[in-house]
Length: 230
Image (cartoon, rainbow, N blue to C red):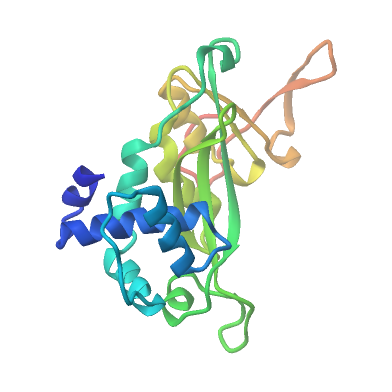
């Protein structure tokens, strides 16, 4: 924790370190108020000094000063596969790539960063963040995640997650993540891939197998830089 806070360039290291622990405690107790989370944090770490006259606005400002970069660095520093050798599938670590939309607080910053559904003149509901994550299936460990606006494509957002996929892994993905260029890129890194895709993309049937499945060829469209098919 000390190392991550230092590498992030945060000043007031001791206070920022407390803020990091507080944000992590908020994740453990999502339905508990700020002051109660602070009390639970103090109860779990008796070595921390006592606090007096702490109010919720002070905690909010502390979170704002901390920012998001420290938490991202911390996650990337400690997150890793937790599955054991017995959890491997035919010697492969099974990973899954998937995306979702999450509603975030309706603040001016979130509206500008993530956007809302509806039109510019008539926005609807809360701002929506698009989250795409890669996780280990056996342990459900989230190895990494990227966040974009609700209009961003899952294919674009997920490009940053390719570094977790390589030799010795089997990556599962839904059809919303399909991309021929990414398929070739990950295959070149030695990864095994099992993805859904739209039927219209696999119309060129090459061979029908005994159990009823078939091998088909998928080719890049004229707007793609991928030069070969699958």
